[in-house]
Length: 589
Image 1 (spheres, rainbow, N blue to C red):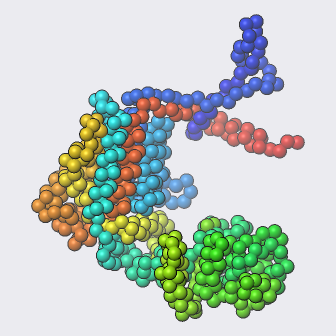
Image 2: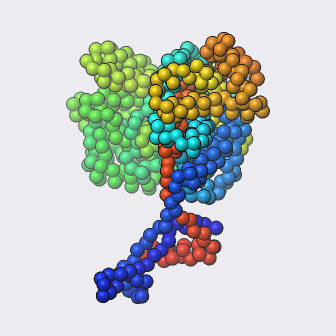
Image 3: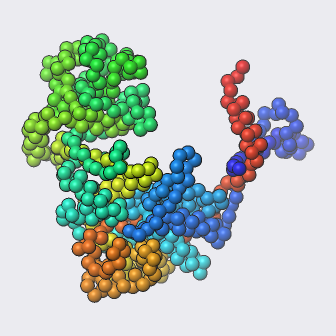
């Protein structure tokens, strides 16, 4: 069975003695036909109930994954094996409800989870649980007659107070051990945390980390020197891996020039040498257009030459600096008229080398072969001197970015598993953990396990009431304050213990011992969570509060929901519709 949401209404305009009136269409040749989709409109309590029902269905599916003893969710796939995941945003994205109004609520929760994932890379389950708690408590207040607009304003004001306080009490990351603990909590695996910590320790502040699939059953990490360019392939026809939509080359030769290549005759001598040598080539130029681009694409598609081209990064004088950096890192000669080298005079020996390159739609990664290490170190020292002498903060920041691109290596975490289902789950966990580590480095760390939010609920109540004087806004603020306990309680519920008991003991521990104490769900012990390694990135908590408050506050102010009316179709009707669409798509005879 399938839903079709369009209702066809046909009418013709016919004259009458009193003017014009609508009448049913009498002739198939009539030119007046209107296609209208019927809508269902619900108001007030009815509309809000359906929204809340949709929100609860998604949140209930997502919240079982929270904490070290959280469960998994199985997602059915139309093709291939089902997927077993523990990632909140992935689960939320998969849910689509039959009732259109409930589905609107589900889509709102998906928006919360997606925003948290985009901004912090983790905390999607926490933000979903917070949204559910705020909405359910807020609906009771709206039903009792409280002004929903004031509630929304109070929730947002309280969210700002909480965000500022979290940033104040957050502790900066103090070493690789903190990063390991953050990664372990985010991934739910000590081994994953160890591998990620090893990767970050090796590449330092300027490197980057990527997750790849392994052919073995075990996880491992490989380190390579490399740099990234925020430019992708010029033509889609240069893609070599259609599934990943990237062009990957092993041991390519690299041409670096600031010239615009539009005449194929300028590069024919070089291309002939490359065809004879049977080596892949990466072209980096200001632009490649016209006959030159056509010739490259044709030779690529025919298999004559493995070539990919990208535009040079940056603009103006900074573009030349970027190109010189790339030339030094790859050992190639910088081809430019100002240094007396033209394209038609380039020899094979002037081209640089790399261990591997991966060119995507908007990003190019060059993994260097390590032969230019001394030249790169000298170049980095030169750029740092330029940064010290820079006149503006902008120039200084760009110089630091160039150092990062040149000096940072790439850590490739290769994920192995016995089955495809396990592999996908592990990759999602690694990606969450890597994003959490980046967030921790940016904004610091706080106690995990929901203890930080429970502490704020216990200590900030009076300050929030003093800051918000309006009575209805105060009620909104208190709704958010009461919702702060939801993550801590859910972690307890998932571990098989009454959530209210865990919350009470955590807040009591904080009163007696100070901020940082809480419950370790993995071991069932109470103590200093910093010492236990149970920590979360402060950015994740801030984004969870802000995103949940934003969507939940808007849901509370909803007074009307407009949705399309679904129409059930039999298999015969569905087939007839497909046949009709196929016929209308044929070219005219």
